[in-house]
Each structure stands twice: as C-alpha cells, then as structure tokens.
Length: 157
View 1 (cartoon, one colour):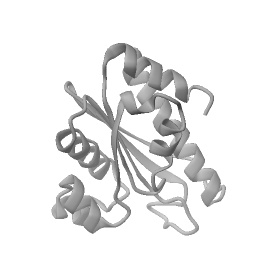
View 2 (tube, one colour):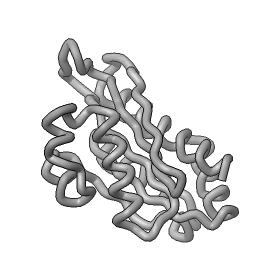
View 3 (cartoon, helix red, strand yellow):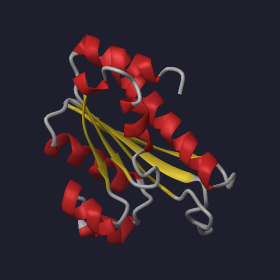
C-alpha cells in the first residue's frame, strides 16, 4: 500500500499507538505496517484471531454475539476493535473479520468483510462487499481498506 508510511507518520505526529485485530487477513495489516521502518514507534501489537475461540479468548468477543450474528458481522468487528483497544496500551485499533473465500452463503457471500475502528471516542463499523474475486484479492483489498480506515482516523486525530 503506497500510503502505509503515511499511516505511520500520522500516528507518530499524533503520538498514537495502534493495535490490529485480524481474522480473515491473518496479520496482513500488521505486516504492512511493520514493513515500514520506524513502525515500532507506533505499532504496539497485533491480534490474529482466526477462530471464534481466539476472538473470545484474546479480544473478549462475547459468545452470545458470535451466536446471534456470526463471526462475519459488524457486531463482532466492533467487539474485536474494542477488545484490542482495551487489551493493549493503544489509542487506536482496527479490526477485520470476513469471508475471503472460497465459499460463503446467500446471506454472507464470499468477499464480505466487516471492519471496526475503536478509539477513545467509541467504535465505528462498516461492511464492504468486495465480491467473489478470489481469496488473495479479497484479503489484499481488506488489508488496504483497513489501512485506509486507520489513515482516516489519524487524519481527524
């Protein structure tokens, strides 16, 4: 991502530490951030919570939320982002949970990814349907979108 260094620079400028909580991207956002020299000044930690159990154990996602909405939901994305924010000494957290493919269902198609961003003001969520364009492409698009969300949050910090 061409502007990943901007995310790092903005976080440094605003003295904001970042955590990521990733499921379908398996750490791709934190890898992109830590590819940038000096990232250690602002990237505190990354949670890779691929399974529902990991989401509950590491981020405090409620079993009831997973049961009611499924892992690919804005409700779970919100709890993931909030969990990362409260379990790390950070001011900003981003979360990703989705269906990279292959597969999916009528109600949760391949390419659907839910995002959360949490900071001291609260948590916001959104869902993006990237389409059934293949696992690698969906994961890369989700990574890039999460980086865009971080940059947007830091632009307004």
